[in-house]
Structure formats: structure tokens, C-alpha cells
Image 1 (spheres, rainbow, N blue to C red):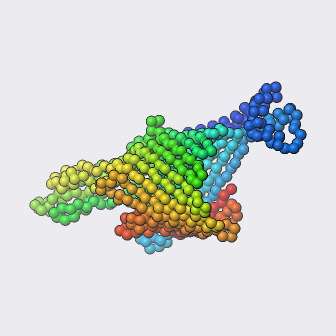
Image 2: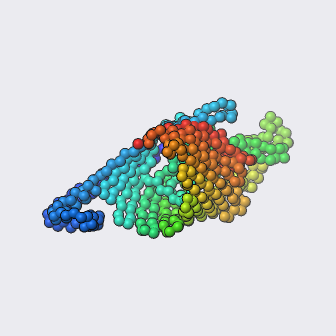
Image 3: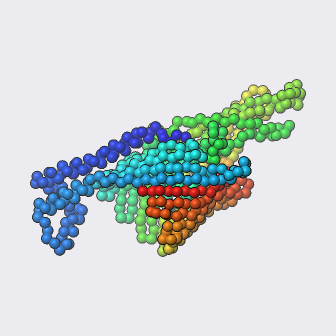
Length: 531
């Protein structure tokens, strides 16, 4: 997968222009100061009163300055507030881990990556701009090696509103580690070991308008440029099985015949339909957030693209004699010898309505979140249609076109309840997540119900320089689990080290959500330098 898309150049150019535009308010302010000194003085006096300077002068028991001195002071204050203020921060992080290779019966690299991240910010008056980028070298997962533009946006703030334009990260909801109403930002699923939720979140190229009030906030978002989830490669793609992360596909197809089970190998190819890129493909979202005594809650809506594609299958089967060495035998039927299957990647529209809330009660906070996702596609229960099965059994040497069952459209209800407890140096949180298919008719591969329980506990020592933490998730349906454990020590305010491990288990029947990742369990060591 390419780490830099063609649209990045346009985003970088726009952000550079934003940084240049930030210098304009300073020039405009200086022009206003000159007009004020010429005798008008309205701009300076209005700004002075609105900023509260007049009140401060009146409450202080000092002598008020003369009119000219007061105006000059106001001019200087406004000029200082409009001057650009630059901030530069960054992070260098290196992480290396080892895992047990059950096939080769040896220890090998499970993860080895180094990341350098840089973020520049500039503020001038009501304007703000940010530019963030990172470079990564990944020895174990070479597809991730390269340069990435993380953020590049401009924000202008008024008294009760602001607007942000560019590449930015927008997070919704109250869930920790699960996605319900948080549908705006895509996810990076090409890396797993010691890879937290913030690292996995991808920015979106969007326009965000917000209005503020003491009791509520309203935001409207438009996303004209679609960003999909970054997924692992399929196992049949070149070099995929040499890495730890790939999507496994069946290598063969079994069919029952009067002569026994016929096993035919499958050869895969992959194609891709055009991604959404027209103005009419723009995603739209809105959210009302209310801040009331005893509860904060939000209602949200989204109409856009599912970040994961559906795969429409097509192909054909080559047939041959059951026993080519005895072509004249009457008990030698034509059977499938090889299947050729193409997976065409297609993105499609979905909609979402959601609700989330946080209810504090002393040291405890209760979190609630639910989302109704409409028109999402799921893989069918049966791969081939009955007609295709009959065609494969027909006694003919000709190739047989394959008729696959299409992905099935369903409505999905997601619900989460969580509790957080913080006391002294302890932090404890637990969540239950429920994933339901509302119109399940036993026609799709996944079950109607999926449940997950998560637990997170941590404690700090030595004036919060040492932190022990453990967290995990269990798949209720099949008992597969994921857990991570770490000991982190802050050597200074800028330098820290962490030793930890990620553990995946299969559960029973090998069907759990974490079963396929049991082979990537690893011990790791991480060093981080920030400034």
C-alpha cells in the first residue's frame, strides 16, 4: 500500500498557504494602528474594552494614563496578540520485539520499527495552523516503511465558532478501543504489536465547523476526500505471507461427488473499482454535544462511505477427468481441477445515528454509547450459488463460469457500557461491547451476536515515574483473547522506556476474532524521546 497518496501534494500546498496567510492579520493590525493614531482610534478602543483592559484599569487603585498613552498601550497589546507564535514538537520512538515461531521452532523478530515524528504549530490572533508528519522504518513489516503526512490544517476562531480546513483527526464517542460512533477517521490495521488506538487513527481531509455555547456545542463536518481503512494484504498477494499480518484465504475448494470428495486448488487475483473522488461523493456528519449538571451527552449522525470495502467475487473453474490416466473408463467423470477467483474491491455508502454519554459520580465515571449502522455488507454464508454447484457437477469438459453469492446488506446495532474508577495512583476501567445484526436470517457468515468484555488496570509509583499496566479483551462467543502488559519508566520528562508483551489466544474451535493473530504474540522493548 502506498503511504503517500497523490492528493497529499495538494494538502501540503494548501497548508503552506495557510501558514503564509497567518502573517496577514499582523499587517492588517498595524494598518489599523496607524489609522487610530491619525485620530479615529475606534478599533483600538473597541478591542481594549472587549478584552477587559478597561475593567482592569478601573478596579486597580492606580492613576489612569492619559488618552494618548492609553491608546498606545492598546495598540501595542493588539500588535503583540497578532504576532505569529511558532511551536515545534516531536517524538522519536524505537520498538523491537521477539516472538516464538511455532513452525520453525525458533525465536524471531516479531516487531522492529523506528518512527520519527515532527509537528509544527503557529498561532496568530484568531488563526491557528498545524503541520505534522512522520517517517517510519519497519524491518518486520516493510510495507509500512516510508513518509506519512499526519495533519495539515488551518483553523480560524471567532467568538462563538471556529472552522478547520485540511487534514485533521476527528474523534467521536466514549468507547475505549471499540468503534461505534467514531466513524469519521479511518484506521490503520496493518500493524498490531504495541500499537494503540491513537497510533491506529488516520486523519481525514475535511472541513469542520463548530458553534459553542455554555450548555452545548454543535459541529458540522464535510469530508470531500475519502480515506479508507489501511488493511493487511491478502495471503495470496506477493510477499504477504512473508510478513506477520495478512488476511488468510482458502487454498482449495472441496466438493462432494459419488466418487468421494474432490479437492481443487484455488488461484486468486485482486482488482479494485474506482474509489470515491467526485464532489457528489462527499461524506457529511453532524453532532450535538450537551454539557449539563451531572451528565454530558451527544447525539450524532453520519452519511458516507464504509471504511472497509466489500469484495465482489467472480471466476471460473477448469474441469478435467477424475483419472486422466484412464480416459476411456465409464467411471471417470469430469470434475473441477482448478478454480480461478477474482476479488473486486468496492466501497459503498452507509449511514449511522448514534448517542454517547458520560456520567461522573465521585471517583467513578459511567460511559454509554450506541450506534445504529445501516446498509452495511457482510459475507454470505454460502460461497457459491446452487446453480454453480450443479454446473460443476455437469459432465462436460468445458470451463464453468462461477456464480458467487453476493455480500448481503444488513443493519447493525452497536452498544457499549463502561465504568472508569480513578483513585490516588490507581486507574481501573471495564467495558462490555455488544454487536448485533438486526435482520439476521442465517444467510451471512458471521453470527447474529458478538460480545466483548475489556478490562484495563494501571498504577503509578515513584512520583508517577514508574507505571505498571495491564489490559485485555475477551471474545464472549468463542473465548479468544488479546491482552497487553507493560512496565514503563520515565527517566526524565523527555525520555522513557517500556518493557511489555502482547498475548493473543485462539479460544475454542479457532473461530474467535483474535484466533488468527495468536502467532504474533510477542515480548517487546520500547524507547521514546519527546520534545
